[in-house]
Image 1: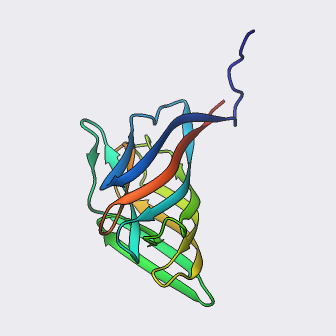
Image 2 (image 1 turned 180 degrees about the horizontal axis):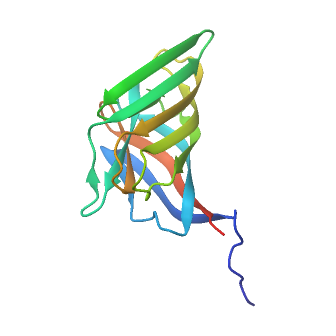
Length: 177
């Protein structure tokens, strides 16, 4: 049996992890020059504290230092009405509201663009289905920019308060030419 290399545009699974009552989960060291675009799929995500925000932060070179400033993002949340939630010059990407119920979990996909690039700010987009603190189903789209040109070498997931659970967090690279 022989295997061939993935062609350009192919998804390549780089990492998979879970979370069980953890303060945070990090995926570090998977961003390489083989990929310019990365997809993250999250399923079964919830927190120990109801109604908190899901938080994403980038890590940079060296010891994968988690960055805590210069994040800008906007969320559009639909739940019988529409909320637009800007979050400028924050300490993290504010993604969506997290339930504390294992029966009301969040699921979604996140895209990271050119994390190793050092000539422009780093951008991220995502679509998330989630439950708010009162049990209402929501849908959120978000986009963000980390206003720094330092290469991004990792990503961290947490909640604004409490610990997190996740059935699976999967990281894929989209193969360059």
